[in-house]
Every structure is written in structure tokens, then in C-alpha cells.
Image 1 (spheres, rainbow, N blue to C red):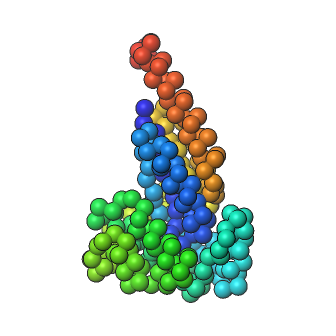
Image 2 (image 1 turned 90 degrees about the vertical axis):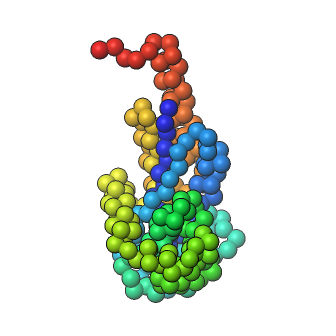
Image 3 (image 1 turned 180 degrees about the vertical axis):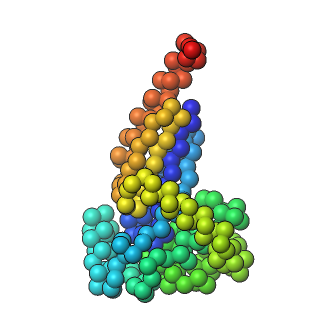
Length: 218
């Protein structure tokens, strides 16, 4: 019985940064039972800080809520853009070179949010991503700036908005039997794992019923 988890994120999001341990733990626990994928959901101007002072306030809030022993760096941000395509498109473009796991986007996130590198600049983002994925930086940059990759990012962002949620991260759990769970803004593993356990239990029940009674009549 197929169950999938889709993780909607923005590479620049601090809450996505804090949610990464939960994502990694889900993949570790359920790697042989669940299909995992991530998609970009670009943040827009309404969710972005407009000044260094406001930005650092956001980071202090999320950092203390998550009990972090360190504070994220806001040095990467120019506070001028209404969205940050470069790091997101570089992460997405890496998929076209066979890098479908988390390594490129995690390297980008760490470089920007922990080290303060200006990964909002295309060339810098491409260099970070290429190093993480053992790719050619020029080829990755060219692909990241292509209309194909941007269109894919915007299509996934549009799908995110159809969920009628506003927070990144958002996790969408889908089961073949029609069950769906949407967790928007959750950054800890416990509620996510509880939902997956319940969905897996239901899926096993359907399998057992089919073994005893076969397909529905009619």
C-alpha cells in the first residue's frame, strides 16, 4: 500500500532549517515503507524580513523556541528582494544532474543560515551547490537559471498554495486509500511520526481486509 510524504520548503527558511532533523529522522525510520520527496515553495515578500534588525528578531524567536545553542546568521540577506530564486533554483537544478537527495539544498541552507554566505547571489549559490553535489559549477548555474527549472519551482509553489497553508515547512502525507494529513509549520518529529504510524496501520488493515474478502463487489 503506497504512502508518500512531500516536504514543501524554501531553502532560505529558518523554520525549514530547524525542521531538517525531523525530516532526516522520518526518512531513517520509514525509508522502507514510505516514499519521500521535497519540493520548493518559494516564500514571498509577505513572509520576508525588511531589515537586519527584524531578521535577527525572527532568528532569535525561532532559535529560542527550538532551544538552539547557536543563533542563525542574517548576513546572507540584502533585504531587498521579494523572493530568493538563486538558492532554491540551484537546489532544484541539482535534481537534473541526478542529485535528488538532500545534500545540495542542505549545503546551501547551512552556508547561508549558519555561515552567512551570500547564497542569494547566483554564482555563490552555484559554487556551494556544485561542491556539495560534486558537479560542475558553470553547468549547475546554467541549469539553475533556465526557464525550465524556474517554471518547475513556480509550479511546485503554486501547488503549495493550493493546500491553503502559509508556513514552510509543510509536510503532506498521502496514502493510496485516500487518507491525507497536512502539517504546516511543524518542525518536530513526534506529531509527524504519529501520523505516519496511524496511516501505516490503516494501510495494513486494508491489506488484511483485501486478503480475506477480496476486491469490493459491484
